[in-house]
Length: 392
Ligand SMILES: Cc1cc2nc3c(=O)[nH]c(=O)nc-3n(C[C@H](O)[C@H](O)[C@H](O)COP(=O)(O)OP(=O)(O)OC[C@H]3O[C@@H](n4cnc5c(N)ncnc54)[C@H](O)[C@@H]3O)c2cc1C
Image (cartoon, rainbow, N blue to C red; front, side, top):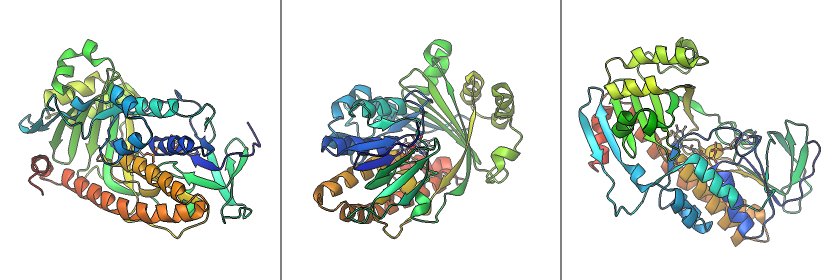
């Protein structure tokens, strides 16, 4: 599609947890919204693993969005189960979720979360297959905003207010700040074992209902149960030899070949628990490499009329369980601010930014501290003490 003109008040670029939550909250209030999403359609790619949604952030936003019942249909409180081992199999910590758990951090598959948010939107809200290339101010809006968006397909659209919810490599962020994500000295490889109860019931039992986490020197391994019958695995590398920003491209692991990648990864876990090795062996591929990056803690920018960011676009953090929650809380705060100042969307964006900068700086600092703990030489012992509430 080419040369379309926006007819809605608010454009949201990116249909991840943050963008879709905002779209739901705004359309509930009668605001006309278009979400421009790069994916060709809702099933264009697998959404990845599972997210734990916290009571005061992700769940709070879903409550405001009237989606608590839908969330409970998919949420897995038992997904909070956790077994933490060292690489020889010694148990460092174990958490078994009681039946009457208050569900402070239940898990939900990313795909289920995306579907329930999409189902809550008026038809046509999401414009699929629209990859934003750039945005320029029109200067035509009375409130000082107004932006023209340009898409990779050659199309254009104008909107009064534009919200960048386009994730880690946001195309809108450079219009507000020169900050770019920096490598964190951690490289990861992700995979999945589908239909695990049928193909490897022994491994399904070892992983249990939640997470099976093994920590060793310079490496860690996590396996997590998802509601689609799969177990997702994640291997992390942060030892002196494999923490470089270019390690994933220089290590010689042929990620384009599942068999080759599996054969190269197994020796790196040779003296780890048999379950770690068996889970890598059972993973048919693909094995997806990912270098961990984050934006500077406490990032802020001078306000520009009619444009702001939320979620990873605004405050990409180490993936220790806060990112999606913070993105959804951003959406709630932004929708609330727009409600509070109906006459001036720009005053709302300013108020939102001040609240978001202050709130997420603390979350980003906490995430960086947890990553430091996980990747330290005594990581297993420190993480176990952290879970026991003994501080660090
Ligand atoms: C391995 C891993 C595990 C994690 N676990 C957790 C967890 O348990 N709990 C938690 O809270 N967080 C977790 N996170 C972090 C979480 O995934 C992110 O913080 C969250 O997805 C951010 O949401 P978002 O809506 O800001 O961005 P995203 O989820 O990145 O969504 C951005 C959307 O924008 C679209 N897009 C991108 N560029 C464009 C463009 N140019 N034009 C149009 N569309 C575009 C993308 O296709 C995507 O749909 C984890 C992250 C990783 C890597």
